[in-house]
Length: 333
Image 1: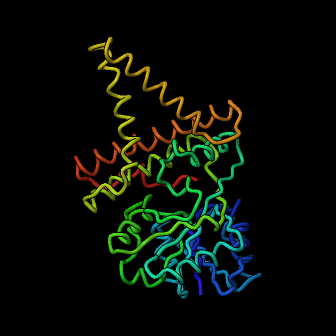
Image 2: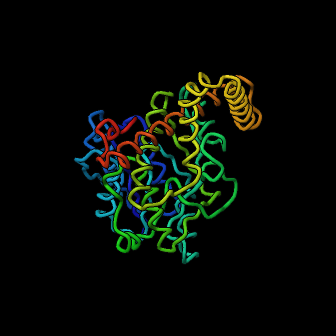
Image 3: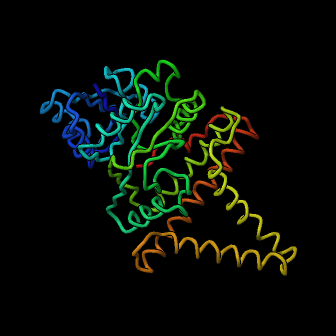
């Protein structure tokens, strides 16, 4: 049996489509647990209607209103042999769950598997964000979002786990508003288990509608990545350092140019030229120039968000040894 856990808060726009897609899965032996963060937009009544239509759908409260609590509440209420975590903005293809299930059943060392993201959008900015998140320039060459074939990876989106792994490793870290899945998967790999990306398993993800929301989302990613690094005394992936280095360069280059303009003006020029050139070239195939420019702008927003968040995390967690600041605890929609 597969238990599908859906963390949810104020997702009236998408929750019905997400749940119905799961119920159409080729794997029929499943339950769908919507863990709702006390929604106020009608989400709960929609889930109630879905429960009336299919007994496999359940609603569980998440009074903490944050994602890691939702993960853990859903897992603790699950009865399945496998735990499939699905975002409230994800639409799974009917073959998604059986493909991941087959991977976990046939590969003993694989404890987590996830499939291929197909980014969708409903705004012009959302289109640009989609392009940025599918670009190696935007999210890094080792990111599962950019892969085109099956591979072992450090983390995946829309993951399926063996339920037994939570008894062995514990649950998701509830102090992490973001990156709780990355942190858990880091623990998983440290124990010698593998994580597999399955390219044939397809799902869609509705990206943030505005660059402002995408900036906040990635700022939280960068911020809590430092928290994860401190917890495990390790840099979990090398690519996470690139945005922080980029932001540091932009902050320092101004004073350096005032000091030695002849040296640092050319450095700024060639760095900017390389950034723009790579961003335009790696935006994706068969795109008009205007779409490449929009993708480049979105990449810059993601990089600045992640990089500034990373430095805020260094200040809070490594220098001041403080808890996460309140402004970083609210989830973006």
